[in-house]
Length: 439
Image (cartoon, rainbow, N blue to C red; front, side):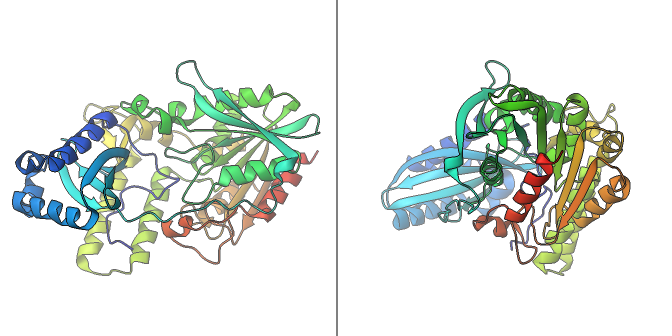
């Protein structure tokens, strides 16, 4: 494991910030490599911040470029393909094509759009999606549609079972961060697994691309979970109700991670929902989850040096800033804390998902948690259980072997675990089918 500071929560529980103009970052990255191609090393070196200029001199940069050319051949093209917030910095991935093969690069930018680091990206391993054994594609059909307001629509897929009337519908709502309609992580596609598994058992669904993936520039200023999650979830619920063959009174929301945390709120916004499913849903504040994750990663690194302990302490100091409950003269709505606007934090910190869930006599609620989940822990499940365990409309189930992606694992892992193809647990799918169909 890299011994690096972990300000941002692990994938699926992090909302990548888009406060930086992504297009400008991409242009800067492409311009930098264009200058290298043209061997204008002085101009390229000017892209560095002062610290990197000292560490990587113009002569060193030239030598690095020559060495890359010796290994990969003549440079043919460069294209920035991804930007991700990393604390106070932004990591831009640039796809490089050379005469003798491809090599991607990662450029680190500061807020002034100066390069603070340049790295060779690790070569990608080919990951292949593993279709679950419980999925029978002959038993359902899928239709591509769009949801959301005109001009800013999101691609979606409606999955419906064949030869079934008045079937239930499930709307899948992502965890934090930009995600595709399958909630793809490495070779894993939890929402695709669930959609196919449920449809094979007579239950339809709607899944859609998350807005932060397609329209990042919409999130350049202050925003909250309303714009990030709730509006589109509401649009998907409306689509589910009008799906041909579906029972409009039997619509469920499956919220994963942050989506599960917000599911009680969705139930108040759509009071006619038949049920909400909270999968790996935090019962605590987001800040508490981030603290746990960073401590876990620190323990996994097995580095007890004073320097690394200081890194963790510094990270915790930064994380603690996200506990803000109100804005003020020094903290403006667009102030950035852990890569997210201050308005996002104050809005989310004012929301108590457990308290809201306790007020719901309808819909039915299913709360599930995996024991091998290192992103959201049993602590949260226990809090849900303590608050809601005696309510008649609530079902809670703990799955000791499941990780955050809802697949069965032999133990807790790190992000590397997500790179191996594994399907959502068949036990979980069967439990969901029985619960959804229960009268």
